[in-house]
Length: 444
Image 1 (cartoon, rainbow, N blue to C red):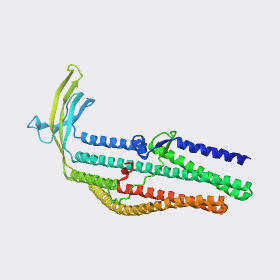
Image 2 (cartoon, one colour):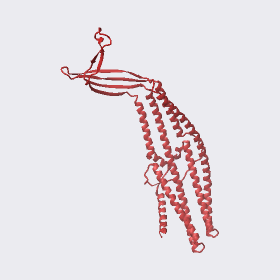
Image 3 (cartoon, rainbow, N blue to C red):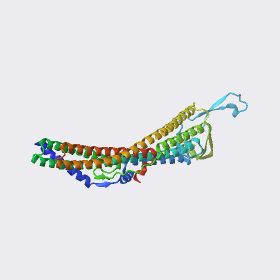
């Protein structure tokens, strides 16, 4: 009794779930992508990365702005510094090589000044500015890459939801046909024109369809939740997808305007810029403008000559710095950077070759799937016609239940072949757009 009670409850839940699907808000693929542009967490993180990169570029440029510092110090000498003075400095008749130790200064020393430093030319500073500018371009390309990936993921989930929705439609139609057949078989059994075994066979098929519909419905809900997560909206929001699956006109798009290649090329520019900076830092000097203005105070706290006096001091000048030898550290960095550039160029060649191969495969798969869709559509129409004719023949007694079940299985197989062909087409078309850098054209 418990099993028999659960079956009607399961059917009611499925019917309720199906009605819930029909009551949900219908979202187009463009609407999903537009919403994700604002609410997707991955895109928000990558936008922050762009802002961080822009701040780094401004930070590098800020090194050209003059730096002003204020300094102050106080020193109390418990023992004054000692200097040696030649005796003949004050007495020419004194012999050479003899000295007298003297202590100069006062115990209290106060210094306060304002210093200015501005680089007039520094190869590392100018190199850092060029590097951060290219790095900012690289960050923007990486944002476009993440945006492309988000669009790819959302489109894939959307297509999967559409396929599952079509599968639910097919299962709903098949279940209705099976229930009609079950009623006919029950009437035939009452008229002793069919056996209980025949009725049970149809009941089994109806239960199998109900179970299959439940599994597909659960997958559909899971896909919708994943879609909502990628869009960036609440999981409690009720949405569904457009039933119609659009098949675009086939075009031989062999463009290679892909972001991966642009990223590698920009990385190559960055590596060459870093190498150029290292080479310049080896041979070019740094020139800075320096200036300082302040005061120096001297104090004496012993009677009877207590005093505290301040004297101004200021200067301006140029500071030149030229690297002579740093232990071959820069040369090792240059060798390292040259190897990175070599790997980058090899990676670009490998990516180009791989992309051409994958584009050719995707085009072939899409063309094959397109033709299969046309064939399976006609097969579904033919299988539906055969099924309806077999039902009529079965009512007239010229066809057996086995003939009806075989016709029903042929119809379901044609439906499944159609869905498989649509999946193959959408997968190949989406992959082709990703490979050719035209994935943004999906919503146009």
